[in-house]
Length: 530
Image 1 (cartoon, one colour):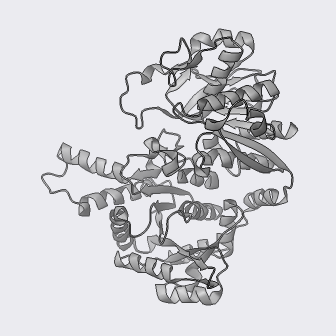
Image 2: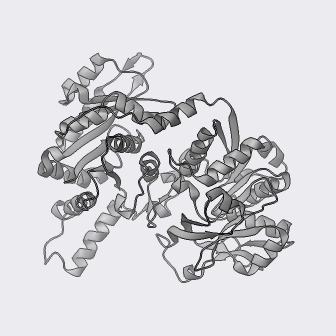
Image 3: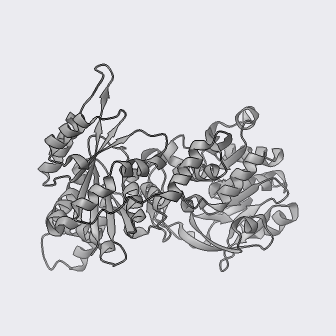
């Protein structure tokens, strides 16, 4: 039978529950266990697909086409597993499932209530992956903060599951220990209150992970253990570190995985080496030279392009470089400040996105990269901006555009996909998930991948208008990646330039710590050579 680990957070949000969940998964994998991680978000949206990145950060897409929370990206990058829609659940999806059952008459006239119907649905979703027989551990992260009204049904479900599963379920609670500079003191009172809140919900945390800016001595850990009914070895501190990738090693050093194993009555054995992971950290620590990448987009928020940032970091590390990412707000790019903003960069990433805001600035950045032979990587909308810029400035179609930005353009070199024209609902209706892509033999991207067939994840409604392919290829932009059945253009490149590649898909979703994506590896290499 699978065993279950529940990760909750208290005091404040954004403490790093996702990183801790991913770290636990990584440490259990190192011990030879098969794991999976799921995220339960308390918001009522069905998924984060329609949420503004300023509100929720990046929207991460699974292989089977589910739009999910960015924490699933951390799960995949740390552990190398591939998540699916079963790994992501929201209050909206829970309630929709229950309401659909009620409408079908599945409850046989019962009055539908939060307890037991909503909580039973949550428990069923938690246990579903464990009942497949594929996993030894199912790690379940509960989004939000203890005390939020929205979290109450999830906590009740956890309480019931802990009671039913006994030693096969463990609760890991993440709290914050603030440092008061004026008093020069660390305060454990918020942690005590957070655990008290958990206890009021009937849940005794088995392990506490204390987020802190300052090192906690054993006296303070003993104080927390005593007030919160937790064994001293189960009070773990998570100090601020230079990189999130150092967290698993820090957690292992303090015995987080060993504490969980003991709580579940499992043999602890010897501590795994984490060899490849430590090698990655050594490369990061020894890198001194910098490669400068300009991220051209419209969302001035680090989490909005999280997977791209991490993919660039992975690739730079394996090239013995530190990556210095500079956000360039495309909304404020003009011909007058273009040189000043972009000249210092070794490479440019033209970011994905939706809507017209900032697109003309992206087109200017593409033009600069093409005419100055700066390595340039266009992703999704970024690729479409490459296509539009080429049409305007090389093909001579001055009013070329995407029908998303200008429905009346006479040269819609980017047009809505045929199967999207009749769709009225916005949420979950784009081309989502992994699709096959056939690469042209002899093309740059085929040599980068080392194969002529790949499978990558998508999130878009608009595509390259195939009626223009001949014009593009005659002038030097090659359509070197195509969907084998639909003929959709997946990849464009200009082989005469140093590195100029655009992908309709999102390669950043498939880059992991131990397996950086080949396109990002090649792009960083070109940026270094520049």
